[in-house]
Length: 225
Image (tube, rainbow, N blue to C red; front, side, top):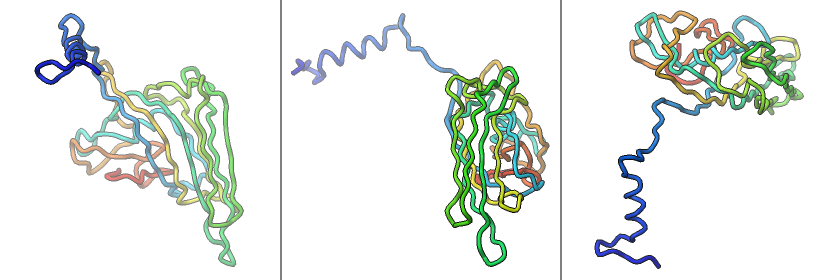
């Protein structure tokens, strides 16, 4: 049992506090904001495409701050993809049966700065109420798994296709991300123009950088534009 001082604290505790407070050995601090966040989206059917390509700029555009009513900036400067998950069920067809639906995820990038291992997965259901489900991480040693700036390089591709070759509306997409900013990087403006925003408010955007009326999959979080 450690010896207690007259103030009721053990000597080891005093030494630990003293070491932490030595002026010549100040602790190192991280002077940037860094957070992990899962963003959730739902497919809208807008555009009719059964797939969409998502870039790193799109992911950074999906969480932004309004500067004015019509201008906005990305909240963070860098993003890292940890995992993508998609779930979907088919809509009703003749006889009130649900269509089968196929979902897929791919990390296909072959351009420098976002080189991928080419991994992809696909899964289907059989027209039941149980969802088709696919989930995939970037390959550990690929550049898809590293921190990326706001560029047009492809992060991943998503697919949600019903048996009649139409897009599955209402598919739920979870994108697990890490974000961080840098004092040396000027905030990037979001690609798609915004309207009627409240300056200073933080908003969520679509998975492909589109606004609510034009995005392949809108955010389920609020407020969103």
